[in-house]
Amino acid sequence: MPNRRGFFRLNLHFLFFLSGIVTVLIGQVLPIFARQFSLSDLQVSWFFPSQFAGSLVGTFFTSRFARRNDYRMATIVGGFAMIAGVLLMNFGAFPIVITGFFINGIGIGMTLPSINMIVLEMSPERTASSLSILNFCWGVGAIVCKPFVDLWSTTDGIGLTTILLAIPMAISTVLLLLDRSYKPLLPELSDPETSGPSIAIWRQPIAWLIALFNLIHVGFESGMGGWLTTYTGRLDGGPIFPLASPTLLYFVFFVAGRGVAPILFRFLSEGKMLMFGLQTILAGMVVVIVADSVLVLSFGSVIAGFGTSWVFPTNVSRFSNEFGPEANRRSAPFFIAGTLGAAISTWLIGFISEISGNLRSGMYVLLISVTLLIVLQIGLGLRARSVVKIERA
Image 1 (cartoon, rainbow, N blue to C red):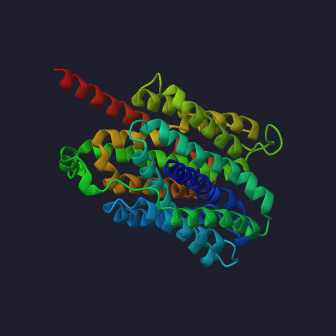
Image 2: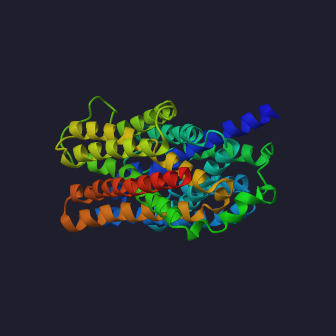
Image 3: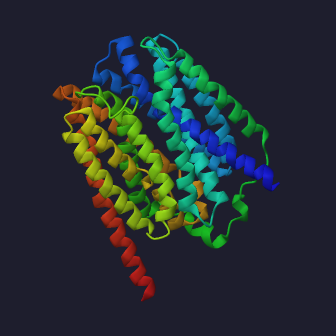
């Protein structure tokens, strides 16, 4: 049984790696679709709401499975949806392609939160570090995505890219379907002392503040992942060295930060880690906004990517620690908030770019987002300290 559980966990991490490729795929293939269908920035931006609308639907589906704590089946359904979605992107008709993004979004909305919740339940004693390792795998997928697209795609289409991505996803999802070694914690076995108060989780302001934090931050991550490649194409010069695009560097240091995070957690609390990450992102975004060349943009991308790395998993851990194990089955609004943030941010960047005639103006959305996150984190930090003082009293 331990070996089977280990294989189950390994397969989850592999599927999460593939989900990283699928999630950021949209930002890497949009320039191809923009040429193929002759789209403006505003028209391109509608691909994002399509994918994130699907993700919202997928999150709602996940909440159904969550009531039975059947995140494994939600992951399986999500895996098959992602396979269908990426294959539909191979067609040359615009309506079919945008439908593919929608279905892909459904898969993302089911797979990402479900795997996060499974890992949380399997690692109750080290939630923050376990989630950092899991999301490290997602980041590796994000790194691989752009060179993967560049290698197997052409200026006319992404056919081979979608097929090569769908095959390992199908293998991983089928293996997950056949593997029944994981036994979730049943709701009726939960501690009554924790299950009682959890019914009122979403009546507490702190829950909505944490969800708001997730809305803004996931919006930032999606905006960077979705528009950085296009933004790079609007600047002069080339990368630091061949293939080292700002997008690749962003995700490389995004992953590097998640590898460093478990070490930093030995010395810093969740609150301090979040503030450190946000301040680092802010510094990177200032460089990104003022960049007048791809070289300068690369440095800003490195800083922003490193700072972003541990913010999402740490906020997920904060939500779980705040409300206990039962929060895992009542997390739908938390993840829905993130999906809404992603849709709003990515579309708003394209909208502002269209009306201003300058994508740099649209990227200010990300700078403002980080500023809002810092203000929100200060408020949450003050609330946490006041709670500690009351408990000590």
